[in-house]
Image (cartoon, rainbow, N blue to C red; front, side, top):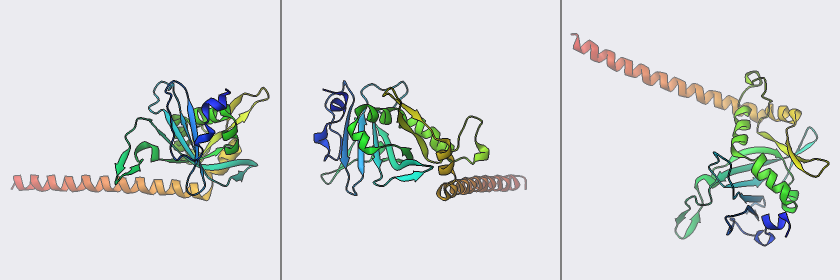
Length: 226
């Protein structure tokens, strides 16, 4: 049995959730959700130090985009533990929790190859989509280019790609031109502006609360000194 056969059970293609019976090795399930998008769920038997999840889920948009000559997919990704609580309401399973708490990302991936090549799928789910790595790029995407550090490249929601080397192995890569293009889309500019506006609103609210508290205390002092 090859690596792909161990990781990816084609009989599970129509399932809505993963069916993982063996805790000793990685496994994966692909399903087609109601709107036709592909959803991959990957169970990682051996977690890295400080990794507080064992399953990565990614939902891939049906149509790709071409940016700087590269094929990109908008995706939703979440991370959760297979033993996370699942809520049942009126006899229907309500997934909820971490598994349905998604982050929007953009990645250079090939969903067809994810179904056909277990090594490729494994590299995407455990390396490219590693939670801390993804969060690092998403945080960077919310900075203006003038705010980026010397070792930080503009990225927007683009997190990079997996490419195959001549020897057949895979590696993570990041296209700087792709990242810059994604960083400067009108949508990302609006997202950053909305985040700035929200931070300014929170700051104004904090100042208003503190000013109200100062006024209240001053009124008490004035009352005491009469």
